[in-house]
Length: 413
Ligand SMILES: Nc1ncnc2c1ncn2[C@@H]1O[C@H](COP(=O)(O)OP(=O)(O)OP(=O)(O)O)[C@@H](O)[C@H]1O
Ligand SMILES: [Mg+2]
Image 1 (cartoon, rainbow, N blue to C red):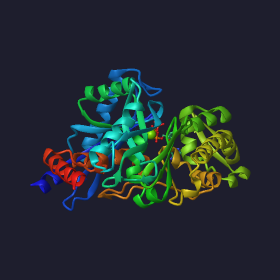
Image 2: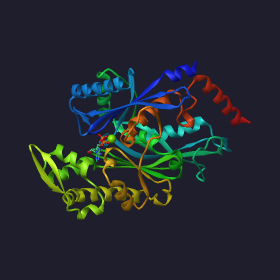
Image 3: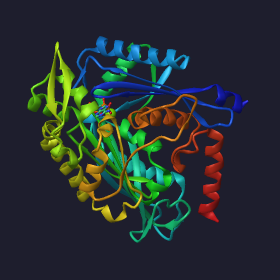
Image 4: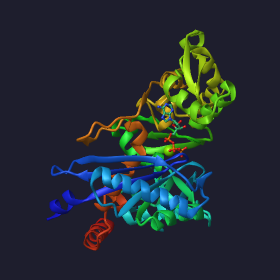
């Protein structure tokens, strides 16, 4: 019966980006493997600087986007896992400590872990913020015993160090309202880049220590993982649009034209600096010759700024020595030709385009661009079946009672 329900379920992710709305659908096949059955991208209107500027325009865009996905994948979309990013998101480190017993010691239970996590959450959140992800990084038992999972250890007090990913509550509610107004439910809201990490990074890399760089239109998000936990998150207010604007300004051409040149002709490698070869680009009714070296020069200043900022984030994290799992870049900005090599020489770590390994009948290109929606859809599936952290596994009342009995037994015997 369960098998039947699983095979019939479809999971959708919807990523509201600064420039594009992206949606993706997953189906769980008979072997309980996730199968990618559709991806869809469309422009966004009624949304600027991470705020809803026109509710009905944004709803219409979302409606058109999810209907496009539905007809492409031949499915019916009811609810989505929503992804947001940019200025809506911030992170904050938190910590809390709770006493466990007056005298002696006790076995740490999942309730204790939940309790200390809850304390850290309460202490680290402001009124106008909504927690999207509350991520315990490390526990300390009796100030001396550091543990990633303290369940079952003896102790008198328990401390946690955590990182919370927060969203501006009202601006987020407005986006949810636009999705609802478009005719869809929101099952959960997540930080898009964090959702992408679920599918663009191998668990082994996250365990060893690795970086995910999500290069979007207006911002670049840098997430650093170690021990399979997010250790640091920083946003750089710089994205692909900065490069397009630099082309507009330096080559004196229109934004649409500059975007096309960026995608088709920019090669961010040093070898381009001396390329005198000319390309003919059509502007209005005439062809304009532009030297390749001029295209290269047009973006250099902005590109250097982006590279410096990414490198500064890596240095500030103080984690360089642990990052043996590599650096992975995703997002539309990561598709710029030669950019991987430039980031690699700037941060001095091996960099590659993040890929999503997923079963699909269609030949999916540029999964790096769609990693957030695939991650969101995956997250929707995992939520439904109660995956996630160990301390949240006991949501069903029978599981809660059994767990509580086990804990009482451990506490007293
Ligand atoms: N092939 C390509 N080569 C170079 N740049 C590209 C390419 N494809 C897309 N881009 C750039 O990627 C950016 C859009 O990326 P993406 O779709 O990930 O952004 P977004 O999710 O809408 O924005 P954000 O993450 O900032 O909210 C744009 O600046 C676009 O010019
Ligand atoms: Mg994005």
